Amino acid sequence: MKLLPDLIPIFPLSGVIYFPKTNLPLNIFEQRYLDLVNDSIKKDRLMGMIQSKKFEKEVYKVGCLGKISDFKKDEDGRILINLTGITRFEVLEEKENSKLYREFKVDYKKFNSDLEPNIEIFDIKILMKNIEHFFKKNGLLLNWREFEKLELTQKINTLSMIAPITNEEKQKLLEAISLKEKVETLQNIINFYLLQKNYLDTQTIQ
Figure 1 (cartoon, one colour):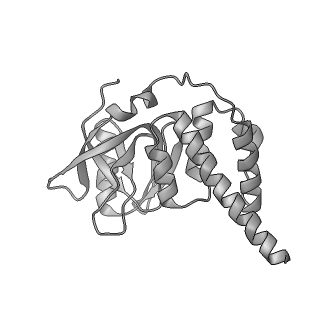
Figure 2 (figure 1 turned 30 degrees about the vertical axis):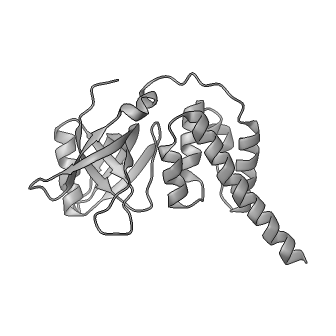
Figure 3 (figure 1 turned 120 degrees about the horizontal axis):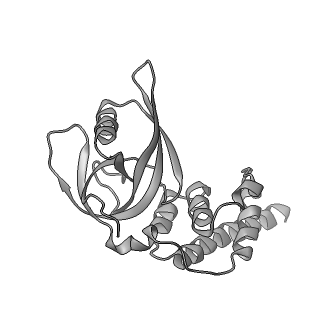
């Protein structure tokens, strides 16, 4: 396990879930998050993203630590950043501070496989066939040729991040411990949507 901070600045955001080994572009304009990004850049460039719940200040228990791999300050004060996912974390508690943004004490132990080379080998041909069909039905375009160049973990995490499914389903994928568990969960979610779509199509024809 790499030495990672156990107290990190957090950007809670509803509907935005990202995964290790994926990239997330963000347009930062709110003052508290401008402060967060500026402080992170001065320190270690590390910050956490976590999905917020419907109720004020409540967040899910699992998020993803990322490193600011690129940033650009605009003349209007905004900061454009690219956040590269490193590892998931589990929230232990929020720490009070005098800053505009929030900080949480976190633990990475449950997701230590995020920092290690993937050694799981299994066939995802059926999943990929269903995913392509699902994306097509939803009018989503993906450069499959470029996608095939990604390694297995990046493929699954990217699909989990961009698939047109609910935020709760994406959170479930984020919290899946092993890659195999994530693949099985994603397959079940996609199958559910395809079966539902086929049923609706059948009802329409009748």
